[in-house]
Each structure stands twice: as C-alpha cells, then as structure tokens.
Amino acid sequence: MRLMNSLKISGVALTIALAGCVMSATAQEPAAAPAQAASDDGYPMVSGDFWEVTGVDLKPGGGLVYAKHLATKWRASQEFAKSQGWIKDYKVMSNYYNRAGEPDLYLITVMADIPNGPESEAQYVAYRTWAAATTEQLSAENADRAEFREIMGTSLLQEMNFRD
Image 1: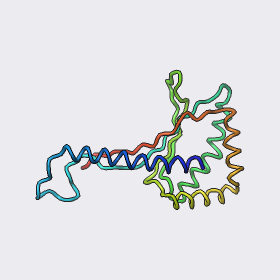
Image 2 (image 1 turned 60 degrees about the horizontal axis):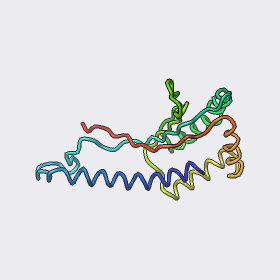
Image 3 (image 1 turned 90 degrees about the horizontal axis):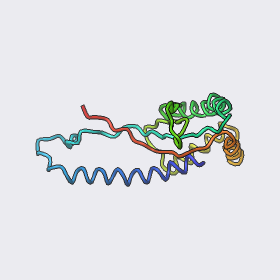
Image 4 (image 1 turned 180 degrees about the vertical axis):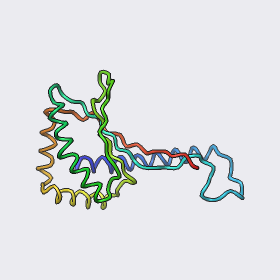
C-alpha cells in the first residue's frame, strides 16, 4: 500500500517536474525549422523507463535475515509483478563503499510507466489475491522487517536516452 501511495505521489511530482524541464528546455531553443520533422524537435534526449530506487540500512546482525527475505518473498513478489507486465526488471545492489548515513543496499524496480489511480488499485487487489493476504497482514509483515532493516528513502528516477 505504501509503495502504491508513494508511486501515486511521485507520479504527480514527476509530471510537474518533467513539465517544468520541458518548458524550460523548449523556451531556450530557437523555433524549429519548417522542414524539421514533428517527432524531432531538436532535443537530444527521449524519456525512458522509470527506476524506483529504495535505500535500505541493515541493522547489526540483520544482513542474513534480510537477504533471506529478499531471496524468497521479495523476489517472488517481484516475479509476480513481472509476470503481470507491471514491471520490466528488478535488482538488488550493494553499496560496497557506503559511508556513514548511506544505505547498505538499494532495491531497484524498473517500470515502463507509472500506473494511474484505478490501475494502481487494481494491481494492489491482484497482488493481495496472489499473496493470499489482507492489507493488515501485509502491513504487519512489513513492520516485522523493521527489526533488521530501515528504509532510508525511495527515489523515482526516469531514464533519459539519447536520440539516435
């Protein structure tokens, strides 16, 4: 539920931010030549996939327990989301040279797009059905993981690809 709500909020913020970037970029560009194709406005990049990146701080002694959780329940849920076409890929990255205050791990989910409100709700219902769990049970499981890890924050990034 937290993920879906954060995606909804992030989606609105991202839309506003991207609109600002596009407006400022186009305001600085000269008018396109009439012969230039409509699909090529001269901007050298095109928007790509969304990457949700969550920073995780492992509490002392919690590494093995959390690794087991990631390798089983988290991985299974990501594979379910992938099989439904909701995500394209997922990764776990270790912050090899983390400094004080930085996450130990990064959980990454790659999506082609962000679901709107009704799509997000339908995905959550389908996930709960697949997990055979209520919202209360899923929330309790998430709270139990606080014993061995702390979520430091989540960022929603969008890949920017160079035009050919």
